[in-house]
Image (cartoon, rainbow over all chains, first blue to last red; front, side):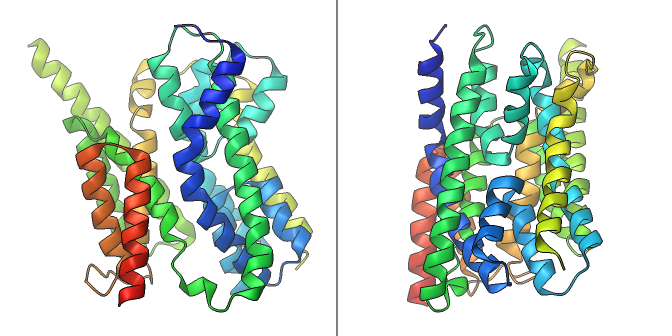
Length: 236
Length: 104
């Protein structure tokens, strides 16, 4: 199936809507927390627009408020965002034909939500040569809404008492659960996800969020090995 | 601490991770085994984030009725498995979560 670039782009925006919806409360709460932690307006906007990394932004603000030194905060950022390297590896075969002027913005936009929303497009539409417009549509839509939500949080948070207690951070969990559940249709994927869940709980107390990496890699390994084993069973 | 310096360093680290492979995409080819394992990346990574967020929102393992994150998470998992619809899962579970949180 072949689509025009404009159609791919608008389909990307359309496909981003569920994730944008989940991202908005999360962005609002970030804007609020950053201001409470001593960031000024421009620094808070800078975090969302220049760093553009939801969970790392939260952890950084929390660590800063707890008096952690800069080196550790940057180190935690590295570990928390290492998962994006996995996404980049998954996208690699699909971006290698693009010029650098495409790869730079697409790389910048490669967050959880964007990857989860656009990767299926590539898998379901392998012969299409302009899926990168879909990727861009999802990415721009999520970037703009994340930053608008941050700005709302900056001004809203200061005027609303106890907004940090509302539980707006549940939006992230709801979004991620909503993205994961449709994948649970075969045994290797179910086993991989359960492994990751268990390892994430067990390793939670390890410093600098390193448990996140251990759990992710553990889950992927189990899924992959089970798939290998199933293929062999079928062949023999 | 110089916050702008922190933002700059965080931005450099984050962008480098996301762009490093893209930068040399023509020169790198992944082994087919790794490519197959990468299919499991997004669900496993996201799960490693949401499971602790829902089961231990305050840092302690808390799968009880007094933990609205746990209740909301359970509802999200149930709807997600049943309907396999991302938007529906998000909307219904968030509504239930906030209703439960305000009711108790």
